[in-house]
Image 1 (cartoon, rainbow, N blue to C red):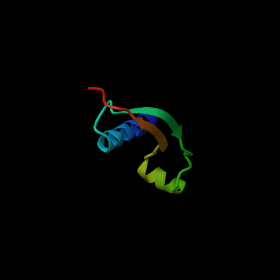
Image 2 (cartoon, one colour):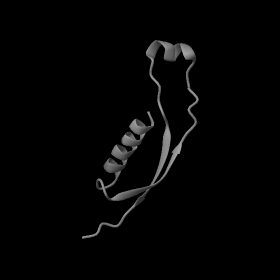
Image 3 (cartoon, helix red, strand yellow):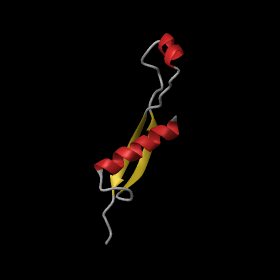
Image 4 (cartoon, rainbow, N blue to C red):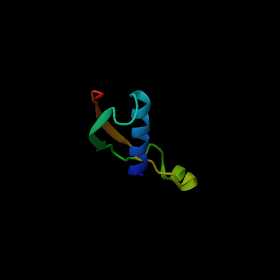
Length: 63
């Protein structure tokens, strides 16, 4: 789950910046994984999620 959350963060960073290589990830923090719904919701849907906070720094493009 953490790998999927990180892949989603990289995809979002690529969309916000000018693409891969224009930023450097400087920090990853896993947020609390307390579930927002009761156990009956997850028993029915069987889906878990991971939440992370990613800090990135834009890099100067070198041409």
